[in-house]
Amino acid sequence: MRKPDGKIVLLGDMNVGKTSLLHRYMERRFPDTVSTVGGAFYLKQWRSYNISIWDTAGREQFHGLGSLYCRGAAAIILTYDVSHPQSLLELEDRFLGLTDTASTDCLFAIVGNKVDLVEEGATEGREEDGPGPGTAGSGGSPKVPKLVQLEDAVALYRKILKYKMLDEKAVPAAEQMCFETSAKTGYNVDLLFETLFDMVVPMIVRQRAQGPPQTVDISSHKTPRRTRSGCCA
Ligand SMILES: Nc1nc2c(ncn2[C@@H]2O[C@H](COP(=O)(O)OP(=O)(O)OP(=O)(O)O)[C@@H](O)[C@H]2O)c(=O)[nH]1
Ligand SMILES: [Mg+2]
Image (tube, rainbow, N blue to C red; front, top):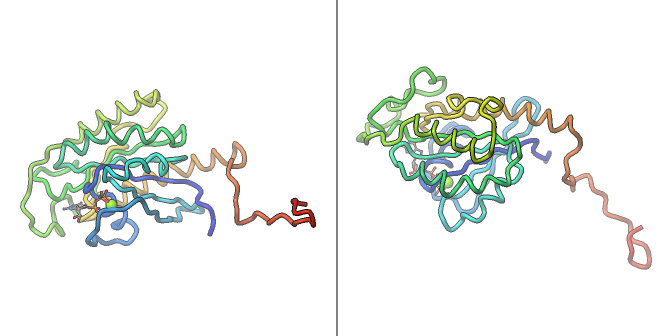
C-alpha cells in the first residue's frame, strides 16, 4: 500500500456525526453507527494523491488519543451538532489543544452537522451535493431549534487563528472554512471534503518541493545482512 501523501482528521464531541459524515462521503450512504472506539481511517485518491481521512472517537475516555491522530495533519475538521451548543464549546475547550501536533500550516474547517434536524434553513447557495438541509431524506422527524448559528462557528474560527497566531490574510477566509452539513441528507458533505482536498493538494506539492519526508518508508527498507558475529554488515 502506498503511503498517504496527506492526512485529514475529524475531531469533535461524541454523537455529533463524524463517522456518519465520513460514511456519507466515502460510501454514499447513512448507515446506523456505533460510537467509535479509538479511531479508523479511509484512504481517498484525489487527483494523483492519496489522502487519509481519520475518524476519531469523541468519547472522553479516548481523549488522549486525539493528539496522536492529529500528528502531522494537513487539515482538521472540527465538528459540532447545530442543535447542541455544548458541542461547539467543547471544540474550543477540549479539542483545539489536541491539534498542536498537526502540521504547522494545518488548515481548519468547522462543521455544524445535523442541519436536517433543525427548524431554520442552513446557509443558502452552498447546496451542491444532496438535497437541502431539512428536505427529502429527513424522514419527517420532528424539528428542533437551531441553537448554534453559522456566525458562532465563524467566531470560533477567528479564535483558532489567534490561538495558532496565524494571520487572517494568510489563511482561507472564515466564510470559506465554516460549513453546515447533514450526513443524513448529504447536504454540503461533498463540498466539505472536496474543498479540503483541493486545499491540501498544494500543501503536499509544497512539502515535496521542500525535500524528502522525515519518515522512513519501511516497505522499501531492506533487512540488513547479518555477519557471523551477529552484527549488521
Ligand atoms: N438527523 C441526523 N442524525 C445524524 C446526522 N449525523 C449523524 N447522525 C446521528 O447521530 C448519531 C451519532 O452519529 P455518529 O456519526 O456515530 O457520531 P460520532 O461523532 O461519530 O460519535 P463518536 O464516534 O461517539 O465520537 C447517530 O445516531 C447518527 O445516525 C445528521 O446529519 N442528521
Ligand atoms: Mg464515530
